[in-house]
Amino acid sequence: MDGQIKFYDESMAWGVIVGDDGKLYAVRGSQVAPPLQVGERVAFEPQSAPGGPRASAVRRLRAVEAPRKGSD
Image (tube, rainbow, N blue to C red; front, side, top):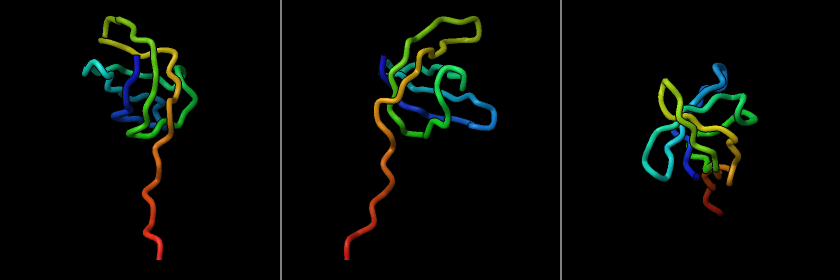
């Protein structure tokens, strides 16, 4: 499944992915090489867990582009 990083705390190595299905999935740093960036598109395997849905085997689809400065 694909989704987008909604939140990621590098110091705690966890975050939240919004799946393209609209559900929220918890992600741990052990599931992907940090740092993840808010807005970054990822692919992942959704997993059921007692605390709620989780993402495993997370991989980046593309990096977030930095805003471009206007050319003079």
